[in-house]
Length: 171
Image 1 (cartoon, helix red, strand yellow):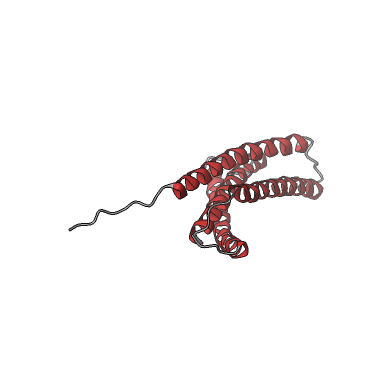
Image 2 (image 1 turned 135 degrees about the vertical axis):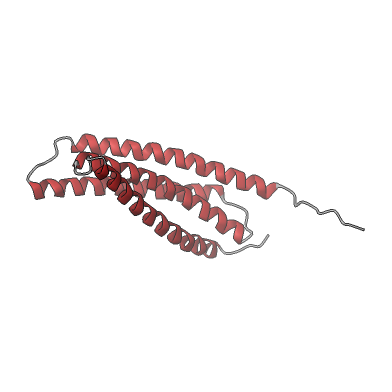
C-alpha cells in the first residue's frame, strides 16, 4: 500500500463530493418540481402547508443522500490512493457534514418562514413547532444515514483485510 499525503486524499474527496453534491442538488430540484406538479394535478398544489411539508420531506431525504455520498467519496479516496481507511476521520467528517447541513437547513427554513410572514403580514404561530418537527425528521434521517455510512466503512475495512485472491495457474 502506498502512503499518499492526507491532503492529497482530502483534495480528491472534496472534488468528488462537490460533483456528487451537485448531482444531489439537481435531483432535489427535479424531485421537488415533480412533487409539486403531482400535487397541482390532484388539486392541492396551491395549499402552502402541503407544499411546505413536501419540500421539508425532500430536504430531509437530500440530507441523507449527502451523508452517504460523503462517506462513499471518502472511502473511495482512501481506496484510490491505496491507503488503509481511517474510520475515525471518515466518521468525523460525515458527522460534521450532518450537523452543519441540518443546522443550515433548519435555520434556512426558519428564516424563509419568518420572511414569508413579514411579506404577507401573517406570522405563522406554529413556526416553532414546525421547525422542531423538521429538525426531528432531519435527525432521524441523519442518524439512519450515519448508521448506513458506518456499515459501508466497516464493509470496506473488512474488504481491505481480505487476502488477495490467487488465480489458479494453468499448466
